Length: 394
Image (cartoon, rainbow, N blue to C red; front, side):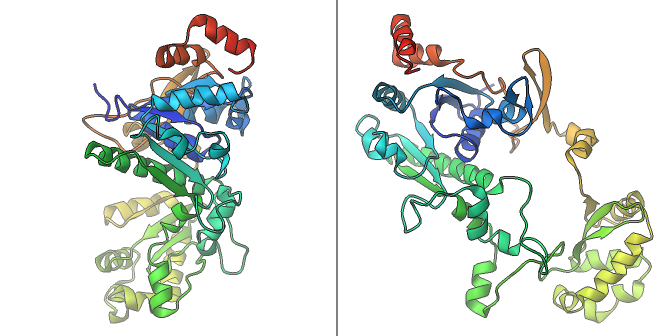
């Protein structure tokens, strides 16, 4: 079955997370992804939980990629990278701005060789502006991009989720930009640069924060487990010391919830008839729901919520997800073979019924495809590959 990106060749020159996540998404949906790694490999190969010398994360993030080792510190290595770029539709890089230009691999260097090349760049602060040269990791960019300011509790320091969320968001934005540029190229537009900044990818998710500030002077801050201006939407502790999230912020949803927990008076109270009124009485409403939750176990509450069609559910760990029948029925886990051992990795979404994506192989060994790619894409002979390896270029 054909994949939507069959025939698209991508050169990935990034490392760690943001750029490689974009390459992973494109590869899952059929693109041929050639990943250039330095002789020591992408540092992510050794990050977090390691088994048999390789990060378990690597087998997920680098799936479907061909690993080619090239020393870009050497002139001959940069020449090889330039030749590869000329044979590709897309280039993805996530180095500090100016690095690719220093190597002679910037957009202007490659345009004469491949005028229709789509050049996707991911950096902390973008390719222009006074902060462009600043180093930008997801942690810092999530902060300046506004996410950390609205995350956590008012009386505590801002918190972060235990994920590199900014990097993943930047990777998603890079894929959107690449796909838009591919569509534009089909319509006759030449190759172009896709400029993605991590802090802007976070900024892009701020919903009504900007117009609320400009139009009403409101600076939205952290609200704990609630959602400012939407009531009720909160996390509640149950009798079995498990948490349940309840979102009954629609008028009819609120009425059904109040009747289910034995408060028809609140369901019919005109003060709570719409969200604006409920916001004014948030503490009163939340106290009633919290008391009801604390008197019942989480499974009872979830069953009641399901029966009355009010959104609610548990806070899952990865162990919960792996055991959940719905996650498994929806195919959210894939099994890959890594050196004879099975490993479960997450499927990549969205789900397409006609041209689905797939994991064809897990993250490769370092340099596993170097000779095959150089020979098939660039026509380099076996002897030339051997000479390049002897010179430590590959």
